[in-house]
Image (tube, rainbow, N blue to C red; front, side, top):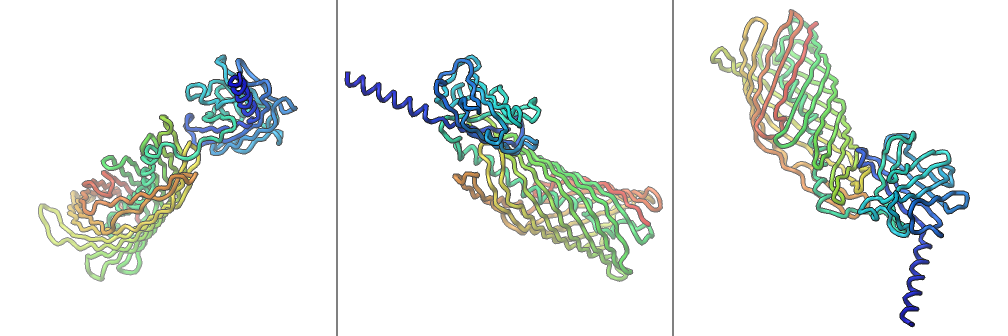
Length: 475
């Protein structure tokens, strides 16, 4: 009898504790709908007489069960972003529904449906209209017609899960963020060794003092990474004294890349380029100095697995690239088969800086520290040139490339809760590889030159294939 009495008292105490714990904590994610938005919220409800729910329960701010409520929405990119409270008059009614399956309001609600929400939740009224629609507790757009965020946590008196729960699965996606650094290198390299792989003095001046051009570049890689990059620019050069030539160009570049776990990155930005060429008096040697500065913005949608399903966190990183190249081109030193063979050599230093950034959205976003690295390379090659006719010139090139710098920058940071820090070493570049290319210069008329070029390389730090086309107008 005493045993039964004690058991009854314990059960009554447990029930009282459950009813006193009336704070629900909530969490939403936009991953299920392909966006980087997220939301958190809480509500204080009076559960008296409302425990096991067969159909629905209403809670009203007019004293009928709704003590307080707040929701903060961010990252959806819509006017729905913001903080909503019952006290602020944004909402005045909360309705729970069981979808005919029944629900225990004294337990975590999302877990009752085999890991999903076994019911529906509706926040409405006030100045904000319908914030949370009934169907599974989705947060909708301001019109209430499109679901933006999916309810991922609804627990009574329990904070939403925080910190990385599956560290190996989460870490497997972190290294993909290093692609941002590689993107900066590629965007800086493509015009430098694409449309500008030759000095300006190597093009026919067509007897004029000035020359304007418009150029488009394309590069693609699939062997060591999956990336596609394009750049375009417009420029002008003019004679500097008897033996010099100065040119300046402004351009725009974009690169899209696939990341692990269905993630992706999209990077775009602008660059400025200046080049000075000098031909020592009376010779055919050309010495050129080229400088380039690029400013880029990379939007990264990092994918990873969370709880057996895919999730995404979104970040924006600023990139700066700075390059300087010194190049020397010799005159033709030998002829064979109608081709003249002229050697050349260049030395290039490029600094790439990836700014620190913090992700938003998803279950486990991360914070990344700044990365900085200086790459140094030398190239030595030969250009074989042949006039196909009075208006057309063919140029064939082969060059060997050597990298002097070591491993790239390491990747450091942590998840936003600070529970998991990471420090990944940089990747060493391939020190030696070879690139092959061809150019065709075609005079369209006495003042216009069309140039088409294409390159391919062995596995290294170049794009697998690249091509450029330019129109040059002398005046």
